[in-house]
Image (cartoon, rainbow, N blue to C red; front, side):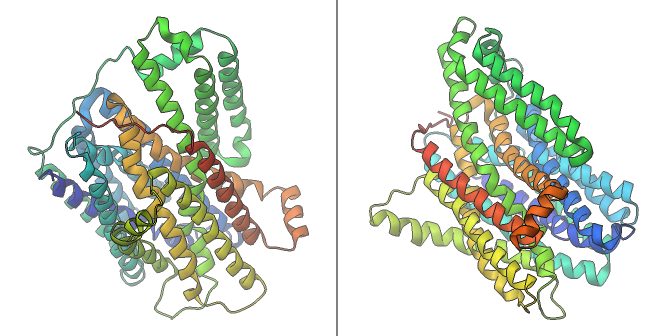
Length: 500
């Protein structure tokens, strides 16, 4: 085991405490303090929109961080300097608890810092391994994900209490202190890490090969232009869905249609690029299809910190228990499930003759998230009918969703690294994180759609509340994605892109 791994794991544990510590009290703080000037009937929707816009930022900025690290400064330097910005963001939350401009500035700095380092820390873990010891990498990624949830567990349990007992400055200040400690731990191991140098200029980079393919014209260019037209058109919807959702939708259309167009005629780029570069781009495009099919999972997963908390507010619970404290259940279950899966479940299934591949884990995880939302939708129907429902019932959907998370997220980190070509480790891991942004985009679009009179009238005709209808809609969304993921994964060819 590389001796520098504990520095990265320790840094990640403290950083995740800081992130989840502020994230898991954000919706409650917005509802009970910062957005009090907004009428109560509109406040829930506004709080959800702010929360998911923030999450979109967190998982969009990995693109920027990955590009800067791969092309200019390397992973270590980029992580260190963005971590300092991250600390400044926490300071803004603690200082500007009653100033909406200052508070939102803090959220922006945290999304920039946290998002920028997110793909780099996980790919930095992979850089410490090579082909001789890559068998240890998945174990370290599991440990990496375990420590993420160790930090998240204590943050989710303690921060709601600190918010209630000591106020927002303390509750947002403590995560800032932990982020400072995380930065110090990471800096302490600077002389022990293996540093992969950036590639300042690559004539055969992913983007240059794609552009060369599209320049040859033909049907591929026509497909890409459809994406351009759609991206421009998405800004027409800005009044209905907001700038952030419009921007992300435009990005999705450009990437989706541009990638599809390039895939149609990659062979035509052979005059400008060597065969290995073209094959590398083809492999990345196949990988991005899988990432796109994971996005519905994130639509469901991230709403446990918004929709599920708002549902918990309607449930009966002890007077001392805060709805947001249910978030601690998720990381607690992760810490149990990761060793259980590796020591008991996977070996048992393999002895039964069932080979547990990374893609099978991820497909099953997406399906489980849909099942969890069927359960939580059933609880909502129960509440809508006027029944008294204990918050204990939420344990069941949390358990199912968490098992899905372990199968998708912990597996996906190592999968994304192993499939990425060597010069594109940071960028490909950024695309993996971008799938979370797109997942939250689907949430914003769904929330915007139910505001229209036609959709509202249709939901009323079904006899269910808007909340329950959306829960079952998202469940179906995930189950369909799981089916498509499984079908596509059958023809996917696994790669081994670790350092030799």
